[in-house]
Amino acid sequence: MAGKSVLIDVSKCIGCRGCQVACKQWNELPAEKTKNRGTYQNPPDLSGMTYTVVRFKELSVGGEMKWNFFKDQCRHCVDPPCKMTADDEAPGAIVVDDNGCVVYTDKTKQLKDLNEACPWDIPRWSDVKSEWVKCTFCHDRVANGLKPACVKACPTGTLTFGDRDKIMALAQKRLQDLGKSYPNAQLMDLEDVRWIYLLHEAEDRFEMGLLREVSKVKYGMKKVFSPMAPVWLTAGFLGMLFKRREEGMRREKENVEVS
Ligand code: SF4
Ligand code: SF4
Image 1 (cartoon, rainbow, N blue to C red):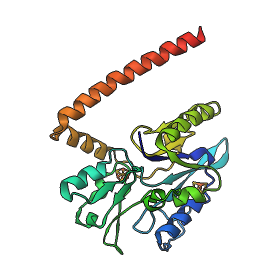
Image 2: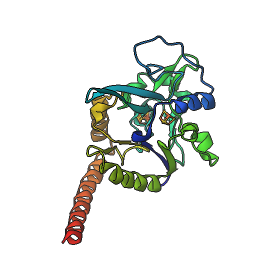
Image 3: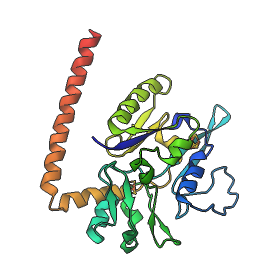
């Protein structure tokens, strides 16, 4: 598939928040006044002034304290549920550019409750701009051959940007490597999103913010009742057959290689 992607290898994240600062700089967003909440995570959530936030999860492992970090932002879905909602209510309010960046325009001010359409609770209302805002994938930088600001700023190699097919291959390779030390390592939503998370531990060992399963259902139902339903269902059925065939071939190959 064409376009760009980012791999977020959270096993390498040290919670420095350089990505948060770079995002604010590039998007000219102000700092937020916050309170001590008994955690080093700051600010507490995404907002109209914060398009990416590093979430901290404090864990006790064998009597020792450790942190897991999770840099949260728009996943830039391949088939974005938020755009599907926008297309009904205000066509053109959300666009996807040639690189696959999901971009909000000022027409989003016409939309109500947009963040309920997002399975990951990403869009936020900006009181300053009076419109919905979120991570832009730095689409202006990307269109000019540059990396997103957060990727450029990250000092640890947690974030890797590139052509989608190369990033997907890298994700699979890195999963294999990480799996040797971390049996619960997993890729999140590889086929469905352009910002792909590689977790080294189980999902409940990370703070991920609000995950809205209801929206996924709503999104699925919208597909079923849309005029495109026969196309979606046929595509889904063929996709399932194709996956099974691929899985069969993979197993067959493994058997051949083992024997
Ligand atoms: S993560 Fe949410 S806001 Fe981003 S493209 Fe997907 S549905 Fe839209
Ligand atoms: S800049 Fe990189 S290492 Fe630092 S918090 Fe962001 S993703 Fe993690």
